[in-house]
Amino acid sequence: MPWTTVTRLLNRHPVRPPDSGMSRRKSLWENIHLDPWLLGLVLLMMGGGLLVLYSASGQHLSMVAGQALRFGVALALMAGIAQFPPSTFLRWAPLMYGLGMLMLLAVELVGDIGMGAQRWLEIPGVIRFQPSEMMKLATPLMVAAYLSRTGVPPRLHHLLISALIIGAPVVLVAMQPDLGTAMLVACAGLLVVLLAGLSWRLIGCFIAILAAALPLLWINLHSYQRQRILTFLNPESDPLGAGWNIIQSTTAIGSGGVWGKGWFEGTQSQLEFLPERHTDFIIAVLGEEFGLVGMTALLALYLIMVCRGLWLAAGAQDSFGRLAAGSIILTFFIYVFVNVGMVSGILPVVGVPLPLISYGGTSSVTLLVGFGVLMSVHAHRRLLPR
Image (cartoon, rainbow, N blue to C red; front, side, top):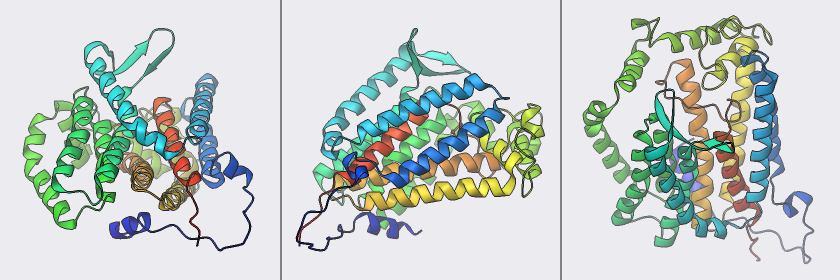
């Protein structure tokens, strides 16, 4: 879908209802401020994700139960968030952003180290979480709140301030180091700027500046990050080292054929050749066990979710609602695209989980809180009279 079509859709005026002469009785879903179609797709995706996780974890029932509990918490938060009007998120955005920045600074000072990275905060005996996941939502909400107050399309000095809002958390997340999450936070913020009506001339200038800065970015990457990019270009250069992950994932997907080998019957995953098979590479498990048919069905569900989300975002009646809702659903699309791309070998491996399928709690909670904001924008719209 061309970018101009997306921005035109999100900025169109709400449809005026016919004058029936009487007030329409609200449905159950309207009273509880939830969208049944998006909720149904989320539940369907969660159910499928638990089935795949049960196989990917080696039939580890406690892991599946833990994930189901996290899904339940995320759904409750989504339903709760949807009850608040969008004006609430407009007021909360600076607080969320400021709290997220403080937690990112806390990670640098006292964060837990795991798998060679300092990304987590832990309250002993209570919770362990990644503050960077919160910034995937707090950053676009903050940019949307700022640009909605200054007016759209944004002027140059508004763009510079937006760049600072986006750049601050991106730098802190990249220092952990977590390049994948840093890129997603940057994309979430930039999508708001693009949806605000950025001209193609400015987009071209920013792309040229980014291209010119690539050598500097390359120099400042960690050695393992540069190795990931080189491995992406030629996985066979180190088949038993850096290229192992991508070679095993593409082998698993290819060996599934059209119909797959069957549930629990995958060799690459069940014999533990496939790394991170319950998190970042879980779609390779699905491809091996359910084949092309299973992967096509999953991607079709994702596409329907994105289309439904864009339709909900298009009904927003103010700048903040359109920018926030549009960026949330388009960021969701980027999550899916990046994960599928890295597992299938068309993008470098950056450690991005597959939404609603991969094992993990913080990412699921952040995603469904975003969907709660999206449902709120749609549920609290006001139908315009004739």
